[in-house]
Length: 123
Image (cartoon, rainbow, N blue to C red; front, top):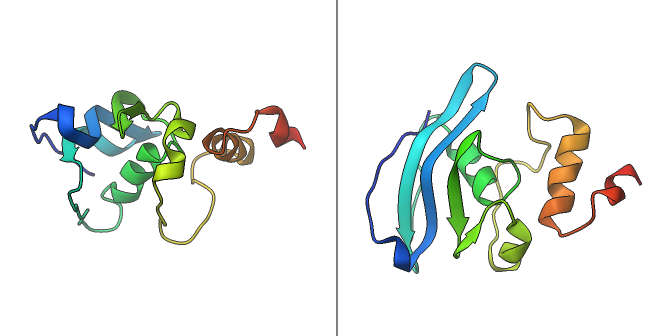
């Protein structure tokens, strides 16, 4: 489980999280993570399997929502990843569906990330 509370100047941050919590049923993957990562900085996420690293990246990419809390990437809320998706890139393990989400919810999150209407999922 990833936990953090790093204080920094958020006005110059490329990524911010505030009280980010993500639960999958009874499992807490992220526990109130609050960070501000500076623009132009290099950051590594280190930890054992299951500690929440990939979950954090998925939230930052807008692939899954947090259970509670807020996150921004390049000044944009992760609730609207289409506003910053063209400026970021990531490869999280092998490309696959997000565990714990139905096939429909996985496709809806991918459609949202690409700025496609949810009606395309039914196609």
